[in-house]
Image 1 (cartoon, helix red, strand yellow):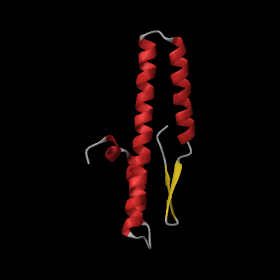
Image 2 (cartoon, helix red, strand yellow; image 1 turned 30 degrees about the vertical axis):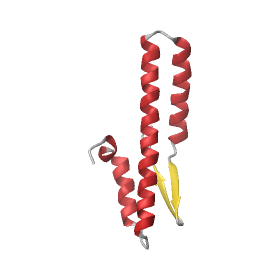
Image 3 (cartoon, rainbow, N blue to C red; image 1 turned 60 degrees about the horizontal axis):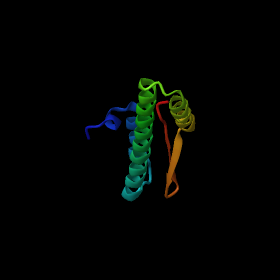
Image 4 (cartoon, rainbow, N blue to C red; image 1 turned 180 degrees about the horizontal axis):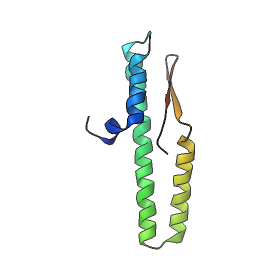
Length: 99
């Protein structure tokens, strides 16, 4: 898999945890894996879009847009600072995000 998530150390650590779960079924592992990839993808996409919008506001000297997108960016980081837990069939996996 050739993307930024395969290179991210936090993602790799989380995937190792998934693989090492004892008494796991293949379906549970696949579901946790899919949920983790989805959460990381959504986070990184939203973060990139907000940074692009902040850059555009700076380039166009739009103070109002800059403050609006900066506030949303800060909220995104705050919402993910402590990570997120995904659950499947009684198994929990805590995901960490670079903030």
